[in-house]
Length: 442
Image 1 (cartoon, rainbow, N blue to C red):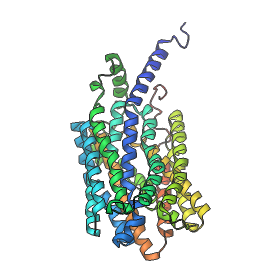
Image 2: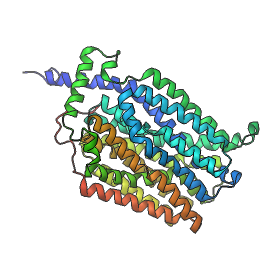
Image 3: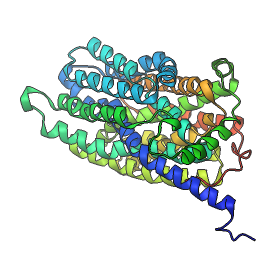
Image 4: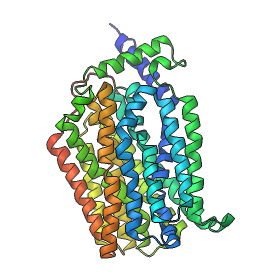
């Protein structure tokens, strides 16, 4: 009789775990850093707003429209971008995306009119289209679904980390560099925060491998083990073509579900500094420091919930509970906008819930999308869901201009998150991975 450690199947599983751990350390630090830079470049306009609006005499509605136009460009070019990445390879395409959006982020420092703001934000969306779904698609090339949940959580930990780093950095740049070289603080914000994206784009081009077969740092036997797990996982997919994706009611329901969660994400990204300022805090540096509190809690929540979801292989409630937590947080902010303690408690719940719900959500579509269908489906879900990135700042900006308060916009956001939780409860099976008999994740 074999002991547990000498059992051939156990030894094989342990060897596979070691190989996937090597892959994790090879790629995930770079992908994580790239996502931090991406999210920072996407939402730093929320901090720039604290000075930019008065400097350029923009209205709240003009800001909201400009912030949201990013997502129109993103929506229009998301699916084509992901299909191109599937064809030309992640290394070239992700590097191109990062360098081009860095140039446009830097160009935002020299806008002067609302029309210029709208134009640059739209082009920024075009440039970044395909980045996040490209990352998710790239993970499907290297990790089977039972190992991928934790990788998505690591990737999307870039959201709270960008908040932890970006808030104090943005506040410092606007506070310390205001007037330096004849430029205002908000201009330096866009210039300085664009540089990491450009540098990381070069590193991506030199470091990533497009497919398992390209990895010279793995032995032939290690490549075989990885590819067997990937191929076994792909055999369970039911949506492997573009036609199957666009004709699937399940895919469109997931688009709507993501829309509600993203409403919450960009209500935070574009309005969190304003929510804090409304409590009586006006110094940009102090506002930036206070934003680290919700993001620190969110980082812990995301890691703990992601680990639990992978260990239990349950996905539905790991989306529902965070979404309802976020809805509760936004409601608390809306009801207590001038109370610093209750507003920060609400923001902490909102940020923790949204940041945790997003990576948990991506376990749902990747469980049944495969092949070209995965490239198209992930992009379709992401770009349609991210239309909320246009709706959220535009509608909240319009409501704030009409009512002179964020209350109605925050309540609308809470309602959309509750709707997302309801859709998952009604239409998503409790255990997506019951069919799999795979070893434990890395």
